[in-house]
Amino acid sequence: MNHDSYDDAYISEILNTVKSLAIVGASANEVRPSFFVTKYLIDKGYTVFPVNPGQAGKEIAGRPVVARLANLPQPVDMVDIFRPSSAVAGVTEEILAMETLPKVVWMQLTVRDDASAKRLEEHDIKVVMDRCPKIEYARLSREIGWNGVNSRVISSKKPIMRKGFQSFGIRQR
Image 1 (cartoon, rainbow, N blue to C red):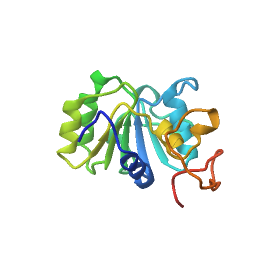
Image 2: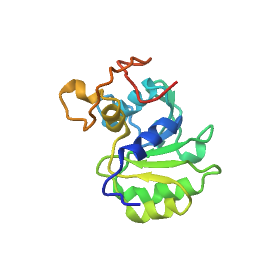
Image 3: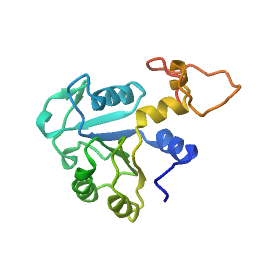
Image 4: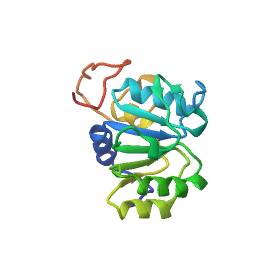
């Protein structure tokens, strides 16, 4: 797969099929991007499991925190990596050691590890690098256009309000 650009259909299919995810590197600090991505995805109806060894046993955005992927209470569809690129290889080892592998591994903005992506794809895991699921969700649902940002999505269809925080949503319930 070419990880320099992603087709909107690829990203949309991931965001529409994923129901649960683990956010490795989730922060309890409300001004950190990993906190508001966690909260945003919860508000959009995803089941989110924050992963942060320093916060294990506590809560982030109302969700219980686990120390490692091995401590997740259930299998997840996606692992979102909010760690530096240098940490991705170690997280990949944790992912591949999971009893049930996720369908998707997503690496946040500026996070890229092509060798890990190749290993994950060899196990039929879809990979997205250097993207944010919050931004992609907002862009594809046209929410980001509310702020005057070009979403690259043109439509004459009137948006349909869905449940959630000011959400037009891309998820069909």
